[in-house]
View (cartoon, rainbow, N blue to C red):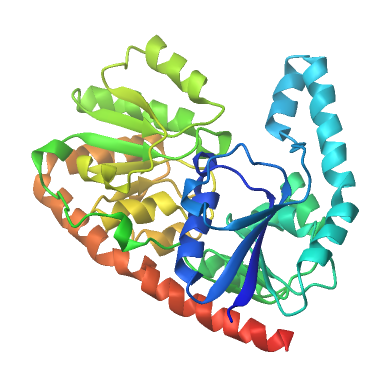
Length: 382
């Protein structure tokens, strides 16, 4: 009989909400033959689309959705929309007040022999202190143990984990000074991709892709400025932007106001990993990341990334000037892009290196690391 493994979310978001749920879709697929996996969602999210996980049992601890939207709260406060401010404050109060009730409910579901993996410190706030669990961190170390007020609050309220799993070696090394930690890279299931890799083909020419959420931390205004400047050097370039988020309307206005409708396109959410076959470069202008899943997905199709330095982990997923580039200023991003677009041989070599270096983020490597960690954790439970 397989041992139970529970994954705990504060709210089980849809796959369109970003890389977190996509990461756990892959995680479930990775370990489903070894463990009986179930999900605990503190807040109701049954209206979300989780087709990829429809075989997994989900325990909802409440029938109401009072997930606080802090960005909405801040925006409403700036616009003096008092009714929205009051609604979101009330949701935040309920969110925190539900902690003791959720702990009792989880304690009834989980036995001492079960494995518990928390998806975030926000989820860990609801886990009883007497349950040993594994904490995952999907953003960089400083978000929860630095100067970010919300992240710091969550790390202080959460129960103490047995071990914390970061997405990069760099974050693990920072954390190891304070608590038990390790790392496991985000990974890609090769089966999601077809065998076709279109490096050097004409359909990729002068085409750039962005895939991710339209949120503040992605610094999309910087990407838009890059697009404006690149048009002066490569007039026929295109930037296709895939994703959803609160800033979609803002970016749409910028496209219209700056006469870039022929160059920059908002393409909506896309879950087809083979879409990368149509592009020569991936742009990422984030202020911070944990370990970008998109860079890994692009590598699987031989698409190199030009990225800002969003954290020490960027140099673990991009080998600078070998299979991608880390540039910080708009000028440097634009000049590097133009260089690659004007030198087909250089672009093909960088693309081949990106494809070659994908293996370190393979499903096989991730499986070895997780099985080793979970077997060690099982020993602590016995």
